[in-house]
Length: 264
Image 1 (cartoon, rainbow, N blue to C red):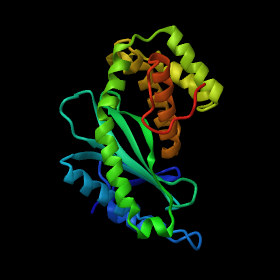
Image 2: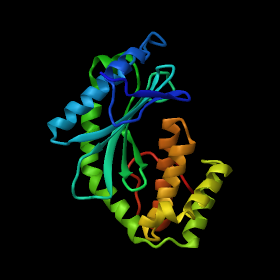
Image 3: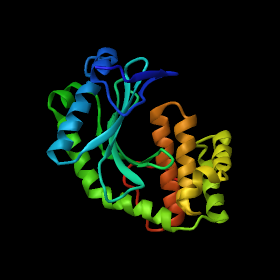
């Protein structure tokens, strides 16, 4: 199999929409970090994700993955084929960190085609699983993957609704001001990235397809989080935060799909 993983700073990442399971198996680190610690193979998880999607007649495409150079942090995301929306696709994937920093958990999002931006809409709270002998040996991960796809199917209309709300809401100076205030109050992206978002927002060449809607702001935020935050997990968390912040500003009835950081 052709090596599709390329080293970018501290992470091996895919560049051409394929996931090289042989490469992942050769470089992932699965040694336990304690008596009750047991790692889950990320390559096996990708296989399980593909099999579960196929069983539900969901077609995954344009898979992307990132493996941290030490072999203990892995991120995976794939588009779910859907011809009903031509300008974006829903995505599903997971993060699998075996260094005791984060539990295994599912990520749900969107991929905007025109600007190639990925938006993390949710990191699903109820899909999390600790790396311990009991969980791994009892095949709890299989149930967590089943739950992830059930949540995805149940929530996909809500994600479409979020996108529709952003595309139908006019972007105003007031909305931008509240967004910047939320970022600054939570110190989530840092001053430099906040300025980059505002500068990108003024770039008509990249944002003209957004037609002056709030989607233009989300496009700029996701572009900056994906290009200037090199750690894929931190990028996903930042995108998730920006998505939740924008939705809270424009939609009083907004309820998060998964984990978000409070913006109050």
